[in-house]
Image 1 (tube, rainbow, N blue to C red):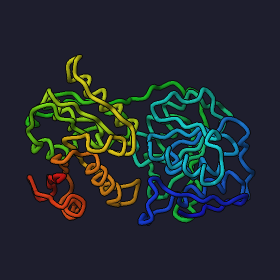
Image 2 (image 1 turned 30 degrees about the vertical axis):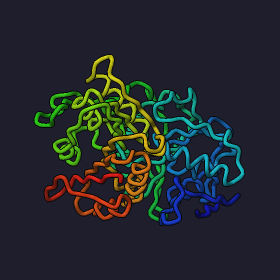
Image 3 (image 1 turned 180 degrees about the vertical axis):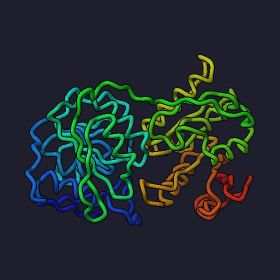
Image 4 (image 1 turned 90 degrees about the horizontal axis):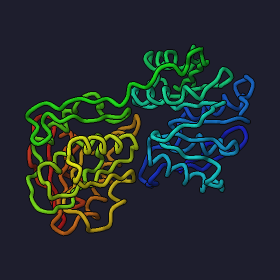
Length: 385
């Protein structure tokens, strides 16, 4: 937990799920810079926050918590960000109803007077969000983006300029920068180009030649990533009424492969990204018959599943949390998978060889074998004893 101090108050903040071993804060200099600008602490006039305030991409709820007195709408693609926001509101004695939580899949507000954008890692997600929000802005809307200097590129500014209107940036402060955008004429004229669909290449087993749907913001949305490609070539061959989980499903191609290979199985697709789960569901529906069954869950990994209810978990864990490299997400996924698996159930993982997941899996499961490997990736199997 850490304390964010503004000119008017201080806020105790934590990421979600809260972990005492987590070295990262729930806010950074970009959040702090934006709040100072809103307050007029840099010598400019304070921003009028009496109208409809929308906060996009608030990573751990720091901005929404600090602005809760203005009853903002928060829009995020992250379930974990929503849970962090609720936790931080409660931690600071603020009623949960002070912030209206919307996902990136929800219809945005009809009118926005102040639009605050935390620049996401994914340029595609920013593009889709700006297209979806543009119809709600008006000539008087104040639009301010924020991010660390390394997160804001010429392409970032061009997106604001093309979709919303004239754009400029602030000077850097503590390696953070602000983006100022003024709505221009014809702001709402162009639709979002997302989702993006492509056909999978041959040589990938049951999913060869299938079309996958990718909503903006999911990992490798414009092509099949090489880790998943390697995993698809080494998935287990099973029969019978297995309960299978595609954990961190992305566009769902791994779970789809399992479902096509074993029609008796029932696959649950889980991701903390609303865009990912929507992609997985559309991919599954487009490539299976009307009677095919599957579950689609947005949530905190396998903690959404009953204990000892699953036969097989397939997992390609992320090793980044926004810009930070960490194995915390993978560790939580492995621990959650073990709890969800029945005795004898298996966790199959693909990962970069250098990440050393085999060591972590042996600590959690007491066993781990290498199924396949190349110079970059390994496929590992751990069994719940």
